[in-house]
Length: 232
Image (tube, rainbow, N blue to C red; front, side, top):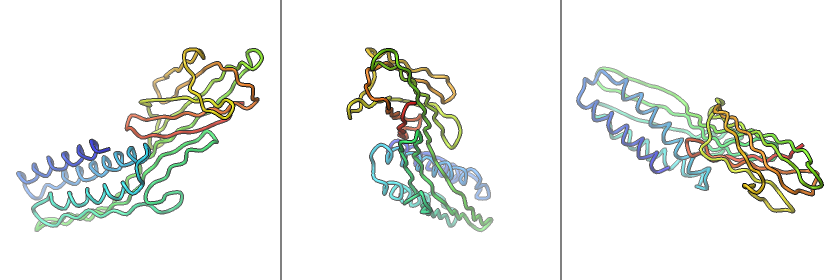
């Protein structure tokens, strides 16, 4: 998260320095940098929070970002305000739901108002940024012999409702109350279709008729999400 926040800060600083050397009636690059930097901060904050950080980190990082913005444009007034989404299911701009129904979500949402003005122009701009990593899984199994079952898990990852690749996927199955990770002794395999869909399969001795599985995923943006499901 710190590296992402730093990259956003450096980006806006660089654009700000360029703006200092150009005409004051060319604010477009600076405005674009503000929105892109805001997105970087939200992505980095959600990555931190979903991996165990405090929800308050989102507000803290956006406050630092807003303060940084106010110091960059030297031709006039430059103000960035934000509000965190509080409408259910969001709280302090964060929504995490890692359920047992095959669905998981890690999301951050903030609204922004930006004012940029000097002697030649007056910009008032509102925009929102919603970063959402979604995980959908479903699982089936077939009995091979006795308690030995072959379990298949289909994993679909999404970023802002679009198919997205995962950086890391860990599959678990429940046995006698404990969550175990299948390995080579379970003939564990995972196949990447290259479009955000993965299939994992393994064999294990599971006496229960219900086979509970869990997928823990980190996407390419370092955002963590998980989902549990019961195999049929």
